[in-house]
Length: 426
Image (cartoon, rainbow, N blue to C red; front, top):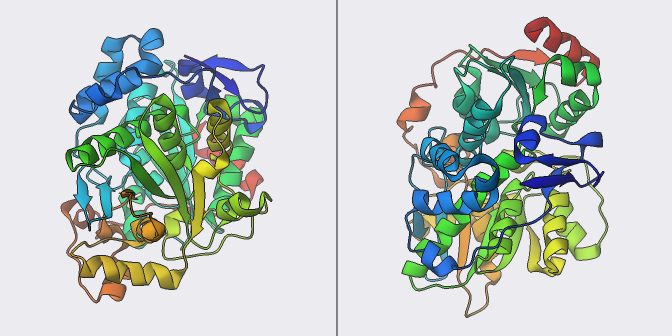
């Protein structure tokens, strides 16, 4: 598999190199030189999730890694269910939160961990990543205890839920967590500065586990095929998919699935008040505003790193950007949708509620799938307040609720971060 740097197309790498580098020159994103096409998607949809995923990922990776290796990676990573739950006659939720950290990030993080474990040099490497919530838990869980990998997770102090925080800040061992005194975009900027600094990048053998890493994106492609397979059994052969969007890796994966041949009619990029992409799709002007804190905090991102890949897929396939519609959902609308979903018999959380709300404009002949990206209990405070509930904690959250947070605090200052990393890791 050959990939090139979107900023510097002359920089070409293999999948193995892209996994280990994370980012290309000048923070450029790696993008496939060719998107594989699947000949008979109808037959694929008859397979179970794991068997189908081996074929989907094999189309990308079998030539370089061997199909047997791909099969082993998939078997190790995808060990949990992906149910599609019908909410009403127009909508269903693809529940992506049945993995070990109760969030959709488990798919990409676990597959990436298997790839890194396979491809890492003997001297080891350092995963440096930023999280607005669920990435931290998924990455920490996926890499915890791996001998050749140390993980540093940065997150905005006080701007993720306490239960989200405890999912990844209570592990210790090879997992180091930093509470940054700013927002997610500042955390992400520190990651990018680290990769730009040769001393840090080479001295600590840096890699990134954010959705900028191509291995995570490819893993996420698989569950779009599962959505289509289960919807087909319900009698729906073409989908409108609404994606709760923050850093836009999830939407990018869906576009890759469509590019491979999956029958998705169109996509909705559903955001909260951090609406850079919906505004861009409406007027063609890329104008990020300051990040706004919302109840859907995993989507509090005003400069989404993966958006250039989404545009690149559309360009490569000759699709108009109108294939993607942008919808920004207010806090009041999010709360109203949570209540409406509960009245319909479905208990959700803010991120999925935003995606569900964005499906309100479906045409009479359309069926919509919205992605459920996290278990409602991960946002217990908000869900309890809005729905007047007292959600019980699932075992995964109950196990960490009473544990102490092991994070260090840090100002949003690169020189301080650099000093900290070398003191801790070198």
